[in-house]
Amino acid sequence: METAIRAEGLCKRFKDHQALNGIDLAVGTGTVLGLLGPNGAGKTTAVRVLSTLLEPDGGYAEVAGFDVVRQPFEVRRRIGLAGQYAAVDGLLTGRENLVLIGVLLHLGGRTARQRAEQLLERFDLTGAADRPARTYSGGMRRRLDLAACLVAAPSVLFLDEPTTGLDPVSRMSLWNAVRELVADGVTVLLTTQYLEEADFLADRIVVIDTGRVIAEGTPDELKRAVGPDRLEIRVMGRDAVGDALAALCADAAEAPTVDLERGIISLRLGEGMGGIAAAATALEKAGVSVADFAVRRPTLDDAFAELTGRKAG
Image (cartoon, rainbow, N blue to C red; front, side, top):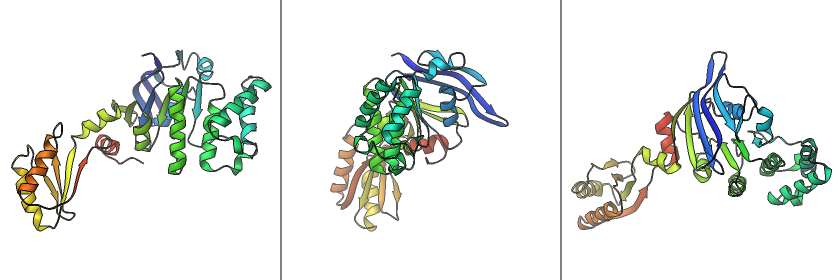
């Protein structure tokens, strides 16, 4: 797979704060990399360096095959950037915003208008195209902002917390738009505080903290690193907890844990369905009545908390 974004030993310091401390990144063409980390970890700084808004103090980075320090204009011709806040002119209509950007990019008036129409239709904004952008909802403004990033048809797109503050419906709409772009071959680097967003969109995830990469892998690899699946069993009545524990301990490789307040027993599962079937059979033989019986898989939230010692967002 070709690499659309590459960084090696990337460093950036602001006075007494080391924002980036030797970060390595590699993003394959036509894939999504989720860049996760707590506030102040260096995510936005990394995006600004890779999009040529900041010069690094050390290391090397290239985007779309061009050095971000020595060839910044070539990089800018091939990228789009959506920051944490929608950068649209509220006094202009949606159509005028897109046409203006096309003209500024020297597409020519006719081509700029054609491109604007294509993007308005793609992001379901045709009906609101001639309304001032200040009348748009938050989700519509974010879609217009993403459309604006695509006027020049970039091959690499940087999205810095693009769905912050959006309602769930608007967020899902934006997620689907990003997936369509990737299907068309666009490479995306995404920073986000919403771990379900990274889980939904990212092919690979890099977790950074204090300017360093502390983990990377696919979403499933990071989840598995936290631990195996667990079977959670809620029995009918507190008196049944002891009987359930005795039945489950007989064949369990690891002693179950119990939450007496909620009446929930948690049992580590191995590979396959055998552990689930064995637990169900043991409880039935012991005459234990079960109120709830569910497999709980580790989430990205679990992985994030394990890696950083903090919860996301």
